[in-house]
Length: 154
Image 1 (cartoon, rainbow, N blue to C red):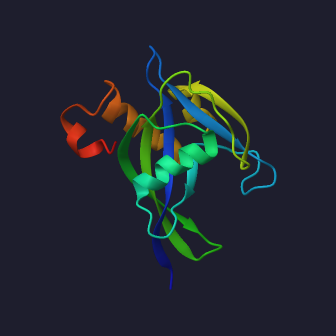
Image 2 (cartoon, one colour; image 1 turned 90 degrees about the horizontal axis):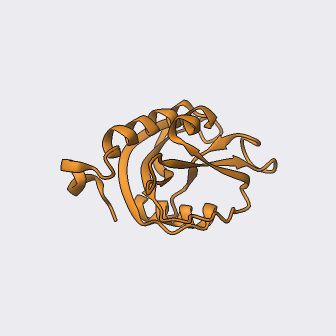
């Protein structure tokens, strides 16, 4: 039997305080899973940890950044054959303040701040491109508009 687990977060780190928003893209180290692939901030939730707390922690651990505003965007399932489980990623958009100087954790060797369209083509996983389109639709005006009370976490 295949398990279903809600245990990871995907966090799209965004510098929105400029004419063209920039999205953080991280290149994975050769000593990790998916070596050389480009991704958003991604990580496991700790036991008992809420998804939004995991999102803030992962941004700090993987990029050394503090989250200014955090929005819940969507959820995306994917299958991990090594665990025999369908994993559900809770997806967030994290706005950070300038200058947004990144300090990489051990999992990544390089980062780039890219316009949203370039980030979409750089990311390895199609679900990351899809999430960016959700972010553009939901937050394109700078906040969630009439859904701010539902989507904004912090």
